[in-house]
Structure formats: C-alpha cells, structure tokens
Length: 97
Image (cartoon, rainbow, N blue to C red; front, top):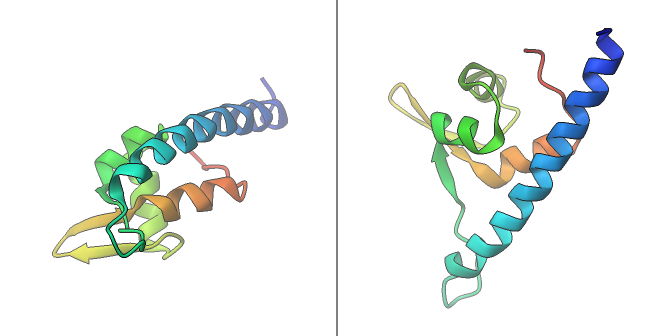
C-alpha cells in the first residue's frame, strides 16, 4: 500500500474515532459541570489517553515533550488534558508511527 493511501485511510479512521470520542465527551461533559458552569479539565494519564484515542503511548509522550498538547508533569508522569488532545487531533495531525 502506498504512503498516500495509508495516510488517507489513517485520517479516515482517526476521523471516525474522533466522532465516537465526541459522543463520549458530550455524555461525560454533562456529568462534569460544576454549579458555577465552568468546565473542569479532564486530565488522564498517557496510557489512558493512548487507549482512548487509539494511538501509541510513545506518540502521546512525544506530543507532551514537544508541548503540542496541554499537560502537567508530576515527577516523571504526565497528565494529559484530554480535550486538548482531541482538539490537536481534529486539526488533522497524523501520527508518524
């Protein structure tokens, strides 16, 4: 399979998975709103972010190291702002792996 076809198929798969994530986010967001109306950022581990987005653990760590997504580093651990990851992927970035 040539590289362009692979990238096209990968983009289509990511788009489909993101629409599923959007549906899950909408359901979860209804449960995460405090009385003040402000959203509470949903922070997840790198492993959880990789599992939810169907991406590799190393790719998520790379995004953190390059400051492409919002995260917090606690010791050697990263906590990912999941909404930031979803927005980054919606922009059309395709993983190199």
